Length: 132
Image (cartoon, rainbow, N blue to C red; front, top):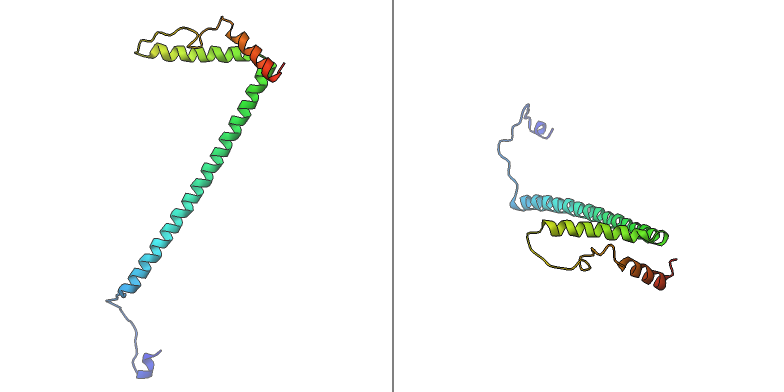
């Protein structure tokens, strides 16, 4: 339209060389870096929120587990005997696979399953908390 006022008719124009000033190039690059930083920050926030939710869920599960164990101990003192047997089995398994030679008595390893340790525990729990 502007060329028509000079009696020049343009049908086709080809731009063969185009360059931007160094300031413009730096501004474009700075904008891209800022956008990348914003995206990175967004993913960091998302990751932190997911980690927070994981921690909350884990804490709730542990609290519920502790409550269930407490209830099981109150209802059935034999539950502690089962836990001691499980612990003794795990300890025995670890010790049996170890290449080291160790000499400990059975009480140290929680293997005194036939002794009066359970009775002493039950009596101490009954006296301290009045569970029964």
